[in-house]
Image 1 (cartoon, rainbow, N blue to C red):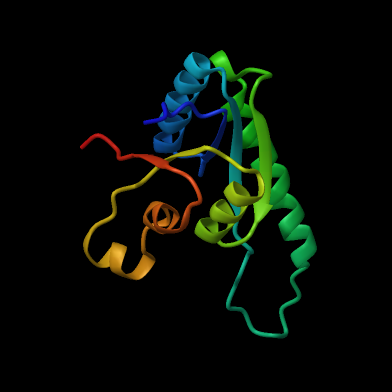
Image 2: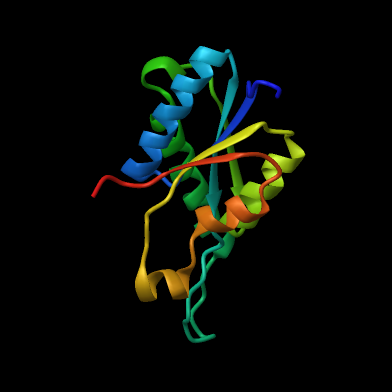
Length: 148
């Protein structure tokens, strides 16, 4: 059996404390294995249910979302072992399918991500991004649940 030694790790983040923990774990794996890390944040298209008479400059809203996401991504990657070593990537789209697409296109060996551990009706209606990624990913997925 071949030894699993990832060289490219994708870490999707939503800027939660849970995703920070997953990023720290990925950094540990990368340090031991000499792997490169790409930190991905998927931005969801803004939507609002407002009357047609209200004018909203969606390009401006999207621009502001992107600027905020860039700042938060930079702050998340800056400290510790990752400083200057991790690649950063922002994408627009639906989180699960975008993560899977990026993993395929980038030929990643491993995805390390957090799961919020939703249960009950919340999980039924919102689903689990981690679960969808696990089902469709082209590579192994290491998922972390919050400590309860």
